[in-house]
Image (cartoon, rainbow, N blue to C red; front, side, top):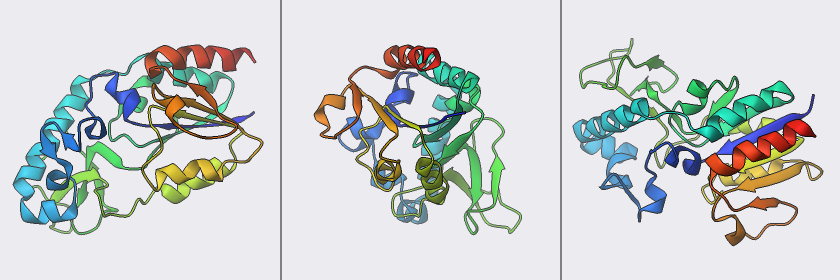
Length: 227
């Protein structure tokens, strides 16, 4: 069975109504990302950061997977599929994909402020100040902030090494370390980029599909299943 590795970015979630800060001048729902997405912001004003992610979590829970999410599930009928997502939502899980690597965490979980390896499911949309882990430390969103290590990058890198088909959806691969994953894919692997801005990217041996994910991915999946 051939292996497909899919990297998804903000573009696939945007079509489910979730806003991305990179398309709005560094603002995320009206906030400067460095005020809500860094360890320093958490130390400076944890209440504001907690409130911000509670609102984002509510938006995620209200959103629904779109046609691109559901189409990727169908690939498992014929291929060994791993999805590496830069998104912090759970839309791939809700669509039904079985193997997902979250590079930047998952907003529906919390983690210990003292030990990031201690993670917990969040019931509902709100994580409150005063809720603590088993070590007695405040719980924070399970999200990788700017300036923090990306703990799942090595697992993602291993998957890329063995890809027969490599698909990038809804991201221009400009943010590292995720942007470097394409360099780990075998030269003989088929590479496909689905993004409205695909033609702006200079890359060799990559099939460019300059369309939105919800439109292009179902057609791409149909083609791959018929091969």
